[in-house]
Structures are given as C-alpha cells and as structure tokens.
Image (tube, rainbow, N blue to C red; front, side, top):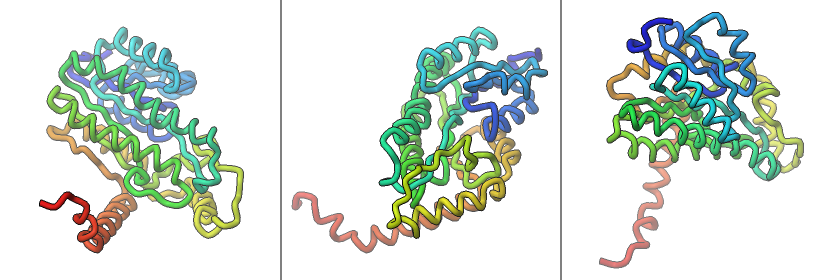
Length: 282
C-alpha cells in the first residue's frame, strides 16, 4: 500500500455500480484510498478487489449499526476519512397521488435518512481532524422538480436543505460541503434496479406524469452525460482550495437552473407588492 499520508481516504456509499463505481475508479486512479461500500460488498470486491487501496465494506444506509460498523472499518484500515460521498439512493417515477405511502417511506429511508445516518457517523471523525469534504449527490431534480418525479425530487430538495445548513455549520471547522447536481448521465439509474415505477395509472395524469414515464424509458442508457467525466470532475473538486456549495454537472442541469432562476425572478417581481404587504406597518 502506498504512503497514505500523501493521499486522500474516501468513503463512498453505493459504490458497486453507476456513479459510485465510477467515482471509486477515478479516486483509485488518482492514487487515493477508497472505502467502497454497498449492500453487497462482493460486487465491489469483484470489480476492485485487485487493488490494495480499496476496502470493500458491507453497508446498508438504512441500518445505523451497519453505518457505524462501516465507519469503524474505515478507521481501522486507514485511520481517517477525508472525503465522504453520499451517493446511495434510488428513484421513484409516478405522479405524487399515484405513489404509495410505503414507496414514499422507502425512498426517504435511503435518500434522506440514510444520508443523514452516514453523515452523522462520519462527522465526528472529520471534526477531530478539523478537515474533510462532504459531497452529497443531489440531482437536477434537487433544484427543480417536475411531473412524474415529485417524490424523488422532494428527497433531493431535502438533501439540498440539509447540505446548505451543514455548509454553514462545518465551514468554521475546516470541513467543506458540496452538493453535486448531475443531470441525465448514462448510468442504470432509470433501469428497474435503480428506480421504482409506481403501479397505479390515473388517467388524469396521462399528459403529465404519464408522458414522463414514457420519456424515461426512451432515454435510459442514452443520456447525454458521461459518468467518467463526472467522476474526474469530482476528484478534482476534492483538490479545490475553495470548493463550491453547489456544483451542477451537465448542460441539461445548467439550462434547468437558469430557467428556474428566471421563472422565480419573474414571479417574484410580479407579486412583489403582495409579498411586501404582510409586514406590520412601520
């Protein structure tokens, strides 16, 4: 194993496939060390087991004992954690009304409560170090929601709100926080193993959420974003002197953010008088 003092130690959730696996590859290629976690660590070991710089670890982000065990394993092997990437998550496609309470709870357990559990377990390590970088994988849907993805986007809106607060709380302690907002990248995210499609089909939503279901099927594995380029950018992000709070990735995300910002500005201007009318008179 190389001299660990000259390289970063990463802990990546959901590292067995998709963006998590590409981030693991990119960090290893940069000479860093990776605690690559997944529900089934054998998949990680099969892909990266030849490198002594990687530690495959079983991790279910919805189980706090599993989370703490993974952090303990990271410290036992490498002694520190420099970069936490909260990547584990899955999607739900369907109108809000079509989505069952059970499906809502499941996606929140992983995308929000799981992210919180891992972050809470790692932060004591970073606070002792007075250094570290928390990278939370959000989405274009964490900045702008839309039909068919309302429940999924709501989990990413939660991640963004938590991350903004963490950014302010941790900056004085030398710990950076960045929200990464990918657009549509060519992974298996829209395939059955990564997204739940709600079974009810309400006819009134055929022209909104229904169309989104069809589009998702047509673009799956044809998305414009390159996961290899994303992974390279994130590795460079961890070396930035002043990393951003938000890092949109993909031309589709940039366009969506610009469109939403323009809409919000226009609507705020149109309703400004009403918005300002509710204060006590001076």
